[in-house]
Amino acid sequence: LDETIVSCEKAQENMKQRHENEMHTLEKQISDLKNEIAELQGQAAVLKEAHHEATCRHEEEKKQLQAKLEEEKTHLQEKLRLEHEMELKARLTQAQASFEQEREGLQSRAWTEEKVRGLTQELEQFHQEQLKSLVEKHTLEKEELRKELLEKH
Image 1: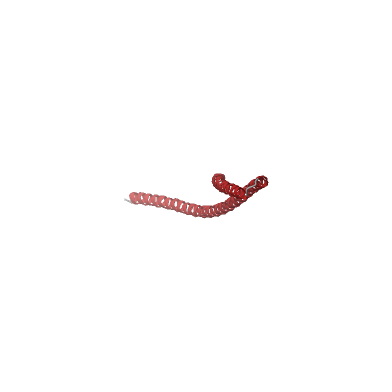
Image 2: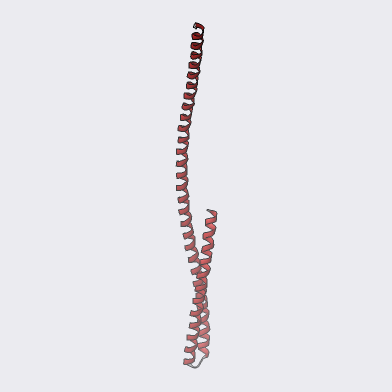
């Protein structure tokens, strides 16, 4: 009986020691996992901040590209307007010169006035057609520039 008691006590002591070892191992694993969780939470916070900064940078770049697009659009509109104005002035000068030549050669004042009205109407009609054409051309170029800038972005 004494031997059995001693044997049971030893077995109990061994089980107690194994239990303590397992508890120590589990506590260490828990501590390691808590440290890993804290580290991952820190990394997540850093990544969130980086994402926020990237989003802000993206918005700023988008605004800059939008402003650049508007500036380029305005520049092209002005360029087209000036080109069109110069073309119209040249045509007007040519029409005026032609008118002067015809007026000098004409004897009938009524016929001259009718011819002037016809030329003026033709010139106005041509001007309207040219203006419409330039507006359409500008709209297409603006859309192409916008697409290019968006693709580059």
